Length: 391
Image: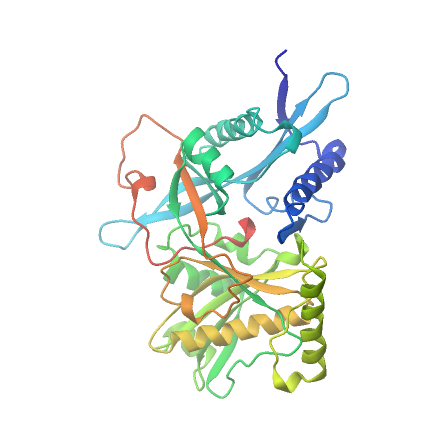
């Protein structure tokens, strides 16, 4: 007998507990493999990771007639982003882009087409709302996910950014105050800077003002050589400078590393004890990541000039110290693998993901390529703009 699968929109009032239970079971299945894995706590809000997007939807897959059971979920959102520029590199070319995240299917109902059905229903919603492209992100070694999207749903491997993660130590990090001055921009000033300098960057959101005015945005900071003033920077930036914005992700979700051995936990605790007892030694300690911990996310990271790397390191130190005050466990960012400033971003390889993969699909058929062409076939640029609402 063929199993009847109903895909419908999430009902927050009646579905939240069932969705939380499904996600917990899916994460537990992964953690039962005796390997360390990352568990995400959504703090009781199934749509927390998409609710700050301009347009979003969460779907559930349900089986059963009388005793209905939610066996699959997926989230999606839509925004307008930059894809490229005109041939003279003066005018950004934009498109409506959809993002798929949080696909989960219960272990007992896998290989029954539920994942495909959820994605296809989500793509229908994307198309109805004017999206021209859809993309998803996963790790390079997540072969089941890549097979589903590239082989069954016709997505193409598109970009390979790096997720760089730095632990938050018990001691503060230097910001090179004798050489680097750090200023905080107002949302209006940050909006002007980003539109002037970054609007041609791939994936730049045209509603950047909404991002910068969001309650989770903790500030945009610029680093310049000591002696430069804020007013001078806004009118005429110095030869070397850098900018970064900070997003309070711990208000959206918390993370937890599961599957660590007792010896690994004890070793990590020992580093924290030493760091707290001897902060002047600046011992690289492992934060408490084996319990739920928060994260701040660095986005809109960029800069220019021969000393831009120094400015970036100062901003990363500043973000680390902000995260320390917020009692977060890590600071994370995501940049293009070929970004010239990538090497200046402090991180631990053991916590980072150098092999993230973004896969993309063109949703709308039957029209000319126009000035954009087929974005799925374009070559990667040096940088990408990662929207903190989707990380």
